[in-house]
Image (cartoon, rainbow, N blue to C red; front, side, top):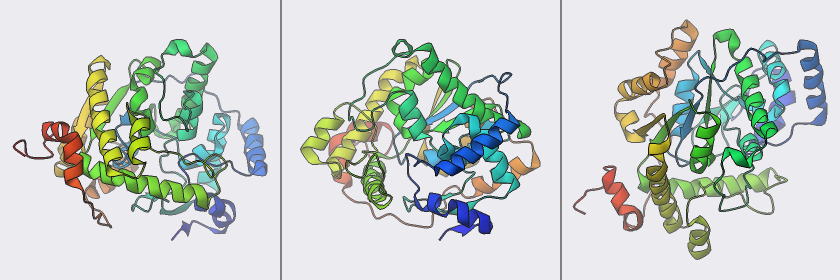
Length: 363
């Protein structure tokens, strides 16, 4: 059930909320034109903004990255792409979009379309998948993405990425936000490229029990496909988007078993672990965290993450209250998943499961 902040929010945001999607749909042209007009009046400047040690949360989908993003986004120094910005798309309009959202109290809140008890609103963090796909030239329909380096991009391509992020940071300067944060599971297999773009970036690499992840990936695929069709997505209504990391052997696994088979998703988790094992020593600033350890000792583990990111504890009263409230919810869920087929996952990913302590090494 969606809750609207006021009647104007209902008029302007109802369709947008109903049409939630990982790859944001275009907003009505008249709204884009109006926001651009306001932006020309405001003339937001980003000339003095530096992108300092941006923070990226990476891992397979369903690894707890949304939870971690929500926690860190409470910090007053953190800037992130809101769902309102993600819908606006044009970074030059971000400041006006956020200003109008706050001044007019434009908001709608409710469970996201994946039906996994995650509550979103216009101001919560988005993955900005459409931006990353376009900026990094990632074909959403290809099941194999080529390895890329900065040499594959023009100076204009690179500057556009910096331009976008600076406009995001600009929206948070009033609260001291100077550290860009993003989580997008799609970036898992392009971490080296992102590290080239941002040599001082901090990467939080989340790992979750592969038996849980493999089951949950199938649920993710089904929910994603349902939404493709429901919203009549112009890109994906006829051909499904596969919301899985582009790991080695993905295409072959899908051809052999299908996208909704536990053998496929077990392979994805196992290959994701192997991939990160190969590249993580080459990433200057990377912290590996088990999702289960966050649940077991949230204060200690999140404290270590804040220290790694050089953020410290939130200090502003509002930020601290939001941070404490979100931390209090860690481990609390309003739905229970009935997962099965663990023996299938163990037969494919047994060694990595044992290495991370997810199953008995004697089994």
